[in-house]
Length: 445
Image (cartoon, rainbow, N blue to C red; front, side, top):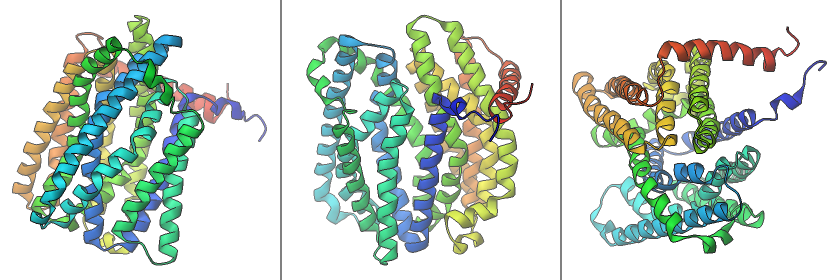
């Protein structure tokens, strides 16, 4: 195409966005196959397991992912090896502790009648262990802003899993247990690729220092609380629905939640690239640059979400059918998706508030922010269920949750980096138009 320059798309923003987009689409295809082939109770059991492993994973990720970006980004030589070795040491120690705790729970399985809890206890430890190298490599690549390698690694992981599921479907052999085995094996394949290509950098483990371990540990204990609370925030709805409304309601609720990946794709991409950029700026004591990145990224995403919201609401019924099956069109999945779509306009500012607080070394404040949101979510979830006596009570908790976090984050971050919502929207509108002109219509003057 004349005048179209593909080189303009070879940057970290596009690679991060493309990577998240490709993987999210693959995960939606995977989800569709599972919804088509498994009984609704087995789907509920799978979703419950994913929520449980997500909470366990948030302990490790919360403790070390932000710390990896903060302390490793922009470092070189001995300092880089020292930091990365300390990350490996802490990750191995934490993983070992949680696996031992899981093993101690196994003898109590015979006293637990619930199938989803049995599945979780049987598989959470081995799954958590298998995901360690892959997860750590992703943190390091984020700090290095190597989004091309992240895409490669995630393609290996998600690609091999979806290929295995398709084969199982073709031979009509897909079961919940087989999915759990596939998940474990694909993690191990991804780990092998990471080690074979040198991305794991496991040798740095022997270059760690006590000082670096202590520094990362003390920072991580606050970001741990934030990430764990954030994951509880995302999964509290699943647990409340499971024990109040049952496994089938969990399967229905998961459909709109997964479809919200439409908004999480650009959000995660911009937060990832923005965080590494802000970390570099903070390490150079450049607060003006931190504010510039925060206002620009949060504003651009908010403006970009507006047309996406209306388009998603229009195609909601088709989207639900596409990722599940005709069976779920008669459920509350479509209406729930349309409700959650409009919440997304508040996500960018809220998410960047928290990320910026972490970057400027205020993880304790960000933890309190997420804690406020978690408490609001639990209170208003139960209040909504008491009022509506159905799954429609859950979105009531959602709106109060996001508003409480947005207000608290705005008040706290303004103490260190003054900004206004109007400033974000004005900058976002300007930057979005500039981006569209450069990338979508490069020939215009």
